[in-house]
Image (spheres, rainbow, N blue to C red):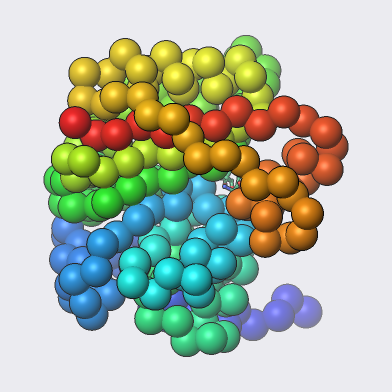
Length: 206
Ligand SMILES: C[S@@+](CC[C@H](N)C(=O)[O-])C[C@H]1O[C@@H](n2cnc3c(N)ncnc32)[C@H](O)[C@@H]1O
């Protein structure tokens, strides 16, 4: 018999439950800066950031509800007020539910590469997505993106480096990976353990 689905409100809500454009002060109950973790997966980065940085509000967006709920559960268990996950397509979320220039940073770690040529159009990072990032990130805010897939990272870099609204910055050093907290995300950990090189990008919204 399938296990009953635990109610994780307000730590996990679906895109359809978000009414209109999110008012961050109402959503988080304060006016601290908001950072997005787009495609947060099972939420290692989101949970650890929520715990370590209570002065920032962290919102994960995740298409796969099961994965998104795993991250939200960790936040819910500690009743952390500054972390939330929205289940749904991040592109719709950015386009329709997030006010222009209202987030301090967007993080897109290890977006799915969709290796097969016929699946490439499913990739998250496109012209349209870069425009959505420019729309929601505040002036002076940042976009971070890491990938182990060199070819995809080149595409991401080209989109961002050539975008009129962004300027490339030097990304922070990659942690050495001595203990679990040195890995940024679940994918970072698994790819480092496989010996993959990690490509890191940081851009500032003009
Ligand atoms: C390769 S995983 C990386 C997960 C996590 N960022 C990490 O580094 O461990 C990519 C994640 O992005 C999610 N994803 C893909 N397209 C998405 C979209 N349009 N909106 C939200 N999440 C998406 C996938 O469901 C998956 O969990």
